[in-house]
Image (cartoon, rainbow, N blue to C red):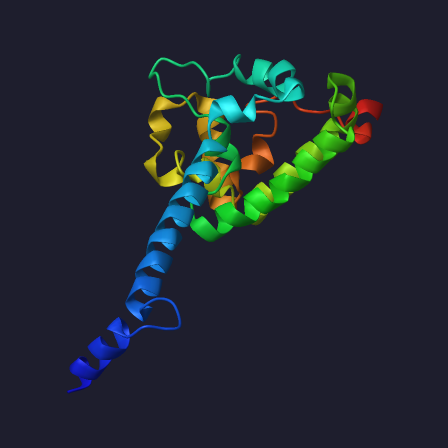
Length: 192
């Protein structure tokens, strides 16, 4: 009885269309919209998108190409989004919202040249480092884990430092600033 009443309502017309037609059109529109949104989100995670800004291509991308994250014996390459975009969906959305601020500064001219980018580089790096510390270097840990390391295959100094960091509960970025890009020098370090 209840199913019959629902089916009648579902097929009955509103002023112009049956409710079922409205729901089906809405569902199709929702799926297409979600698919388009998700496709664009994934496009913004590509290397081509990341280095499409002249400042990125001329600075951090050139540095990254000289690192083990770009070229190594195993042939595994980490791209920008592997280190800078979280995999969990809500964290990813939050990072994309924060990235819109970077696009804003590109458009208004705050960082639209290599020189302007370099002038703000330390501030930008400190923001990335703070985010990585806050997330316990979540993106690093997608590939690196203390518990999967073979300490015996590491150089002695590396082994000592990594085991010490693990015991102290340190996060990756605390010791590895400048691992994929030139480390900006702070005024404190410059004075030494």
